[in-house]
Amino acid sequence: MAAQQVAPDGLRVVLADAHPVIRSGLRAVLQAIPDVDVAAEAESFGETVRAVLMYRPDVVVLDLDLGRRTVTEILRSAPHTRVLIFTMTDEDESIVAALRAGALGYVLKDAPHDSILRAIRGVAAGEAVLGPTVARRLGELVGRVVPDAGQVGGLTSRERDVLTLVAENLPNSAIAQRLGLAPKTISNHLSAIFAKLGVSSRAEAAVRARREGLR
Image (cartoon, one colour):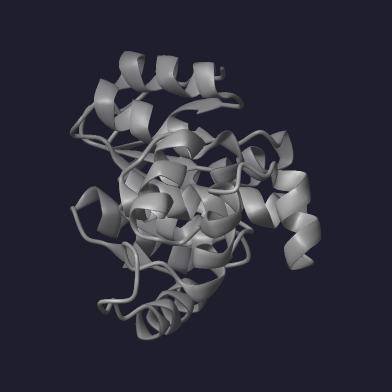
C-alpha cells in the first residue's frame, strides 16, 4: 500500500486497483490538481480496507475487480467515505450490483480525464454520478425491468431463467451450458439476483424461486 503526505484541506482520495499501471496513470492525473490528494494506493481487498481505516478518505476510486464485498466493507468501516467504481465492465448486472452495494458513482476507465475528475468531485459531494455509457445502459435496464404481478423482485427474463435453474440445484457450469452463456455471465446474473431479492446465498434464492412457483 503506497501513501503520501496529505494536505489538510484537500479532497482525500484512495486509489484501489489491482493493476499498478492504472493506479500510476490515475495518480498522475490527480496529482496535477492542487486540491486533490491521493492519500494511498491499494491493490487488494485487505489493503483497501486498511487504507480506508487509516486515511478516512472522501472518495475511494475502486476497480470493480476487487469485488462488491469491498464496497460493502468500505461503507461499513467508514460510512462517510464515498465509493466511485472505476472499471472496464459495463454489464448490466455489474452496474446494478455495485450500485445496490452502495457505490455512489460508476465510470468506465476509458472516460476522459476531466470526466473522471468531475465524477470524483461529484461523488465526494454526495451526488450520484454515472458515466454516459453507464447511464444509458442503466436507463435501458430500467426500461426493460418494469415489475408486474408475474415478476419476482423486478428480475429480467434472463435472471428468471437463471433463478429457475438455481431452484433445480444446478451448478453454474450446468446453468451456463443450458442457457448457452459463459460461467462468468452466470455469476454476474447471480450477483444481480441476490441484490434484487435481498438474499445472500443460492439456498435462499432457491427457496424464494420455489415460493414464487418458478421451479
